[in-house]
Image (cartoon, rainbow, N blue to C red; front, side):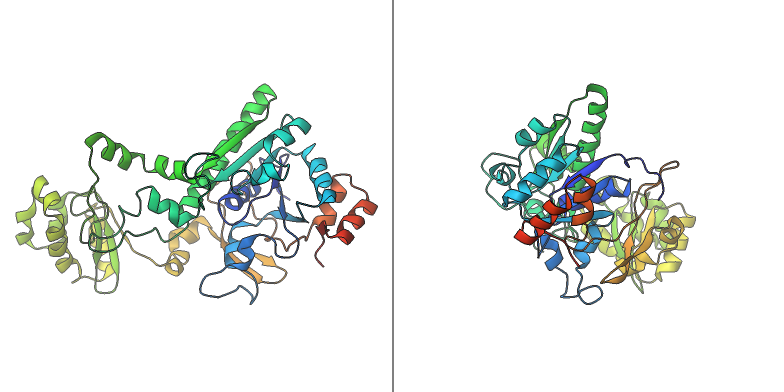
Length: 400
């Protein structure tokens, strides 16, 4: 196994769905020993959810497979006394705890930061939630699309005549995961300097607002929201030509580029009448339609070639499958795979960060529920008799 940067870090991962599991998967890719603690039987809720009622290998959730590689599964009933004793034993030497239950759930179970810190003062305890640990929204569900709606990005996405549009991925959760990694790594570095653990609190609402800071600064300092365009213009604050344009066989994107240079490529001098900063913003939908009437005369390949030759910022618009087959994606080695005992060969997007000395790697497939229960508990010094008793009582589960 390749030596990796976090190979001496043990993480007890109580999280489920996307935010927490993506966080711990990124840390696991860098070598952390992530022990995924999930309920016996059904496990992580994402195991039972999928898109389009399709299951990889006929039975495994692509949602779960996407966010849980490089982990070991320990199946425990958190309410059972035997499980509580096991967890407290694990906490003694663990480095990090991650959880994204609703605020208060882990504390009510007796697994809050204070309880764990009494056993291990060096523990780093990271909680992820929708809105933080208190406040008027604390009892609300913190699901990704709900957060997108509350934080302005849906109201800023899409066209003016259409409903507010969510981003077509779990964007809030993914940003939350990045912020959990950011907080955990910072806390680990502080612990190296001070010897002290600490609590790290992340919430989706704060993350989404922080990642839209340029839009928030604009709105708050001018006292008005930016209006969505009613065309393919790509941002409510941008002028033409910034946007997405049709071709004979697809779509292209054109970013911040001199308008006159673009007109030179398209070859229609009549479009010069729009070449004024005020017009390009105030009449951006009209300009977009005029430009689109020209771009649609080209094939995607020919238009991209001409635009790049003129040093105009542009790109193709690709589906997920087309992106997977993209030559730059292939060059970067991003599409990887692992072998799963039930799903077979699972294609995934590999780690996004390259390290010269301690590369991120995929060493394990996403686990079955309780696949590593006996293995993990043995490593932590729990006797075989106690493991057998926990399994027989239902406090723990070992998959076959």
